[in-house]
Image 1 (spheres, rainbow over the protein chains, first blue to last red):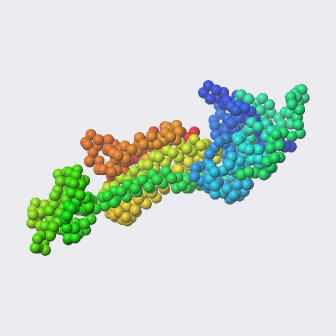
Image 2 (tube, chains in turn green, orange):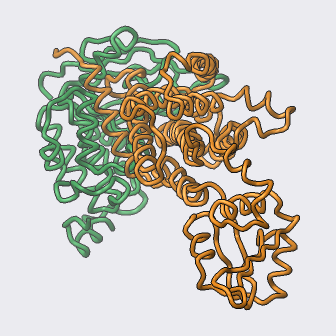
Image 3 (tube, each protein chain N blue to C red):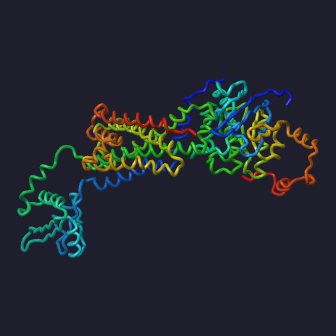
Amino acid sequence: METKKAIISVNNLVKKYDDFVAVQGLSFEVYENEIFGLLGPNGAGKTTTLEIIETLRDKTSGEIIVDGFSVDKQAQDIKQIIGVQLQAAGYYPNLNLIELIELFAGLYGANIKPMEMLEKVNLQDKAKAKYKALSGGQKQRFSIATTLINQPKIIFLDEPTTGLDPQARRNLWDLIIEIRNAGTTVVITTHYMDEAEQLCDRVAFVERGQIIALDTPDNLIDQLVSSGFERKKEVKKANLEDVFINLTGQEWRE
Amino acid sequence: MKKYNNIKATLALAKASFRSIMRSPSAVVFTLAFPLIFILVFGFLGGGGTHIDVGVTPGSDVNNPVMGMLEKTGMIRLVKDKSKADFDKLLEKGNVDAMIDVHRKVNSAAYSVNVVYTSASRDKGGILKSVLNNIFYDKTLKPTVAEIKESTITGREYKTIDFILPGQLGFSLLSTGVFGTAFVFLSLRQTLVIKRFFATPVRRSSIVIGEGIARIGFALIGALFIILIGHFFFGFTLVHGAATVVNMLILATMGVIVFMGFGFIISGIAKNESMVPPISNIITLPQFLLSGTFFSIEAFPSWLQPISRALPLTYLNDAMRKVAFEGVGLWDVKFQIMILLLWGIGIYAVAVKVFKWE
């Protein structure tokens, strides 16, 4: 992260529903080619913020620039350079994975080979399978494949690892890191802190529609430690998940 | 940046939707299986017009030319192997339309035929009378009925299939348009498929048009299939052959576009998938029953006819029958087309108001 050029800048974003303020004055920047995490409890406004940046939802006020395009006037331009994975989104019924990729290629106006897209997420064996027939981890990998079709500059992943087993989760982390290494900026939401710590270059904590902390995971931990915080239990060199992975193996179960 | 191609996106959606429809059992059942079953049933039931059940009196001679000729007409079914008591009951209820008893006359080559009619089935008895009269010159049966036979045969033969098929076709288009569209848009909305589409540069109009192209394409393939099966297997009349088929398909397109409007409205009103069938039935069932799908609306009581004449399917059925059987051109059914068009404008005006994307 030497260059630190902002690819997304959110300035004083506010979103009000009828009698409820979901987002109140959020400001942050996402740098080019980083994995940026939005963390926070359910209902904190993470998804709302993401969907406003993705041009799927109107904002009440504030300013958002995505790679030089304004969400107000250039939503179409933004859609062409982003890839979006929605929380719990389904896919067109009765189609197999290849056909779904073809559909999205048409929607994005992209010329791609569907099989190559599936290879990127290691689903080439499932080319003729229906989305519904996939396992949780496979579904998420397929969703990520659909975000890559238009060779986006930024992809948004909304809780991609929720509900996955440890192997599938680690496997997905590897995929996300690969995508970042290929030059794509990744914005991700999660409520798993171990995930954020391993995966994210920088994280923002969102609470009641406001950012309460924003830094690298390391710095945030150091700050807490220097304030005199100590874990009640002595930290061991491994945790239970390490035991799980060690016992059941690293390979995918799909 | 490469210019975004809306047509390509629309066609990609049409292709995806068409594939999906072809693999959806309910779409195939409603569009093809249902109408074909009705056509099959009515095609066989009514292929030669009416059937007359004639009981053969126990003890009657069966190997005689009279019965052979009766069976050859294809209209008369001889019922044998029942007791006298059974036949009396059937005759009383009209389940058997008449009884026949044939005996060779003593010391003669001639047969004596004894026919008993029932007041429970006067009309069929009348037909039998004329059939017998036609094939068998017996002085005792000849008078009074000879003229009736001649006066009933007029013009081109209007078969049951000529009435039933356009009605079934109309119903098929109605169900495809209403159920299919309502289910698809509701489920795409609920499973966030549409939301995911919105994250791509695709236009809303492309989503609607792409879906429409697929549905119209599917409906037309279904219509063509129904027309061809009707024509080749059940003798459905196509006065000008292929030209008539093309005209029917043009009418079918108009019909399905109008009916899809109902589907858009339902997908907007329904809160979940289980609400789709009841609301759809409110729209389709009255039209199924009252729009002349099975019976001519002239057969309805006069207070019901204005309701029939208000429904769009009535006009589609009417136009289809005129085009197929009378062989008129589309311009000659402009009145029916105009009413359909008015319905279309009204339906889509409502659809625009109630349709929900999210």
